[in-house]
Length: 282
Ligand SMILES: CC(C)(COP(=O)(O)OP(=O)(O)OC[C@H]1O[C@@H](n2cnc3c(N)ncnc32)[C@H](O)[C@@H]1OP(=O)(O)O)[C@@H](O)C(=O)NCCC(=O)NCCS
Image 1 (cartoon, rainbow, N blue to C red):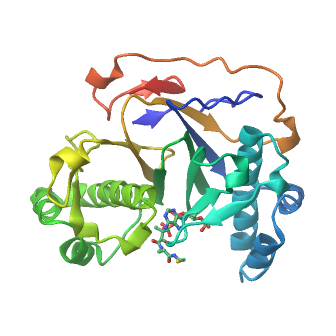
Image 2 (image 1 turned 180 degrees about the vertical axis):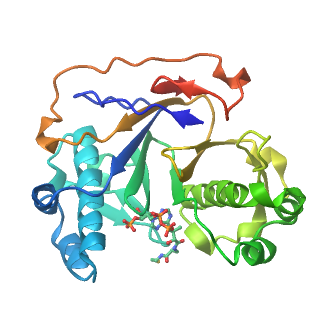
Image 3 (image 1 turned 180 degrees about the horizontal axis):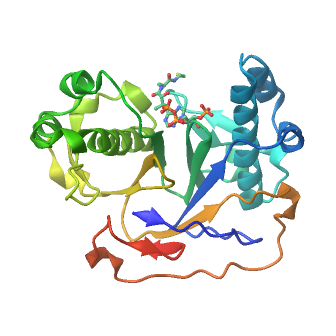
């Protein structure tokens, strides 16, 4: 699916059926980097300083600065006051002080592009990858993917394999990030669809299709040369796609309510074909 990224509204409302998906370009001019740096915690600043290359350092600062700015808007605090806690495998969550089991989020970045997903009451996972050559692609599939995924991969013509690999990989990682396990979770314990003709789906977990059917999975083409996927338990989500604005973050004020465009009955359309106007009910 190719989303259309809308300018975000000044006022955010996240109901428990909404999923907000934000895209941000991380290569910002120096003065913007400095602005974001001031929003980070001392730990995050120290972590940024430890990065050897300036480009990585700046992207780290911008990535965290944007995350804090968006979360701050949802919970109504200054970005620098947002506090995180971390799961056993490192998944960041909002501190309970901002509402237990309330806003959930996940972040992924690849080179200069980041995706942020926000939901209420439900854990979510997202992964973005730039599509690139991976010399050991076949070995990774053989060693780590499930038997079904291996069979599908082998059946594809060579020209389709690279795209299929990243489609499969991002779907799998989105699921593993949603459950908070990341790459600690064995990649061959679950199956995802990924041949070019199949819709995005989690097909089975430990061989159980019933368990898998409780999950919603979606692949996106966020920008040319990138692919991404998100995973969340439950169905009936209203998706909103927003582009982080290339302007000072202080412009995000509580002024007006969003004008959302809901597109109904999209389920019957072909996922890979549709271009949607900024939001979608699924
Ligand atoms: C989490 C993981 C899947 C990220 O993969 P990736 O493709 O390199 O990176 P992405 O850009 O997609 O995601 C990174 C973000 O995922 C989030 N994240 C980190 N751990 C996570 C987890 N266990 N589950 C879900 N999300 C996680 C963070 O927001 C992180 O952003 P940050 O690096 O800016 O802090 C991978 O690093 C992993 O599984 N690591 C194993 C867990 C680990 O080593 N934890 C160390 C502490 S115990």
